[in-house]
Image (cartoon, rainbow, N blue to C red; front, side, top):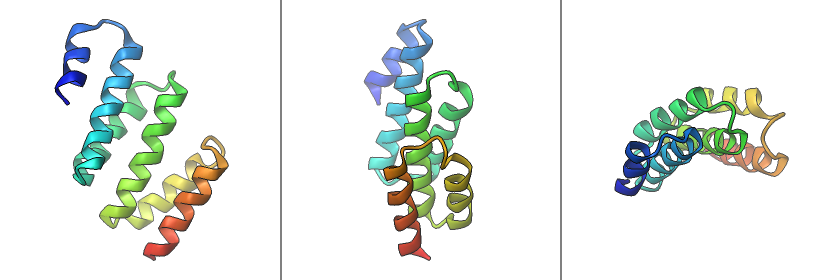
Length: 102
């Protein structure tokens, strides 16, 4: 996380910020701090809509975190909302993960 924070504080490039915030959210996911992960990745989704690859990775992992955190209805709604934008393989994987939790 320290490197990501250094990028955020040291760069004026919005693309650098988008990637750094994404990395911070993914680190929280890996640490299984799902509530903080969801909050962090929702910021990425809201603040950086112009960086589609970053935004969609944030969407994917925020849905994964919702599923693992037990927010199944929210995850289901997010899958439906973003199903046309996400890679179809990702949609299938998220749907199967969700089904396994229901």
